[in-house]
Image (cartoon, rainbow, N blue to C red; front, top):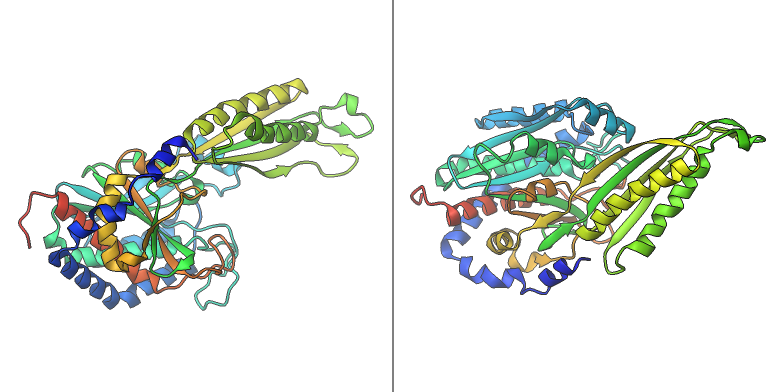
Length: 442
């Protein structure tokens, strides 16, 4: 963990700073109305989630998922537009090299409720995982892919929030922008939408993202002030050697031997060149090549992933890993291709936390809102928080001991759905009232 984060962690608990100032009668009355409205549309939020759950799509290109989102927005009378479009050819090829299906476009969806500034963005990802679902749900996916990270629930909660916010549009002191994002599991879906203008027209001033957590009690809310999630740097290495008979290694260039050398070298980097106080997790999750015991193959492949909460450690390893790869492969006479992916840390803005935590607590109950350690996993909402103040909140959707996210057995508690929709709505309406100046009170 970085020194910078340790300093932030020592600061006064954010909830205690400003909660009492915001628990006004007006805000409490608004929270009651929003909770009641969320419960009233509960069955529709559940329906939306189950429709999406039964038809999971992975990657950037989610045509059926995006079409359903747009259909729902049309029903609400909310104008929408696509955000993403065609992907660069190299990006498509790089992700195919990493094992993703062919993705030639990104099908993000944005919409705006209200008008003018300030503007707060509400983000929900909506892509699935290449995991076969294994449970007895009547609406489970029967394909080889599944919503085992809960993104179907995020999209459904944001659709629920949209219904609430559309009814309250006259009360909004500015704009709420909805961001339905593909490709979170690629680590770059948010980046594509940012590059295609999701933070402009209207210009976004703050952003809120939610994520369900099935191993936490339903309805709880956890957040980490400062660094919220680890960065992820992935290195897809393809080593090209010279194949031949195993009885004549002197006539060959063995890519498996080179791969083994690189594997050991990059793992030693963490133990010898990074600060022990920094959280660094390096994993070589794919190592493959060869077909038979008596054949030296032509190629081998190694996938290296580095997660850390420490920016200095990430920068150092991003420089040293390619250096080591280059030196080891060339030292043994091979050639190689290297594809690199980067997803930054997500950063939760402390001032925005002070502003939003009391409103979140009015929905969940103040006693259910807690600060938590940063997540060692990675979340591409970091591309948003690099540009605007953001807050990322984990909403409990189960109980300790449940199957975790990404498990084929993961099942979430649908009681979380109206809670999440209400949190989105309450936080955005109240934040706009706190910062907006252009409209009279409704």
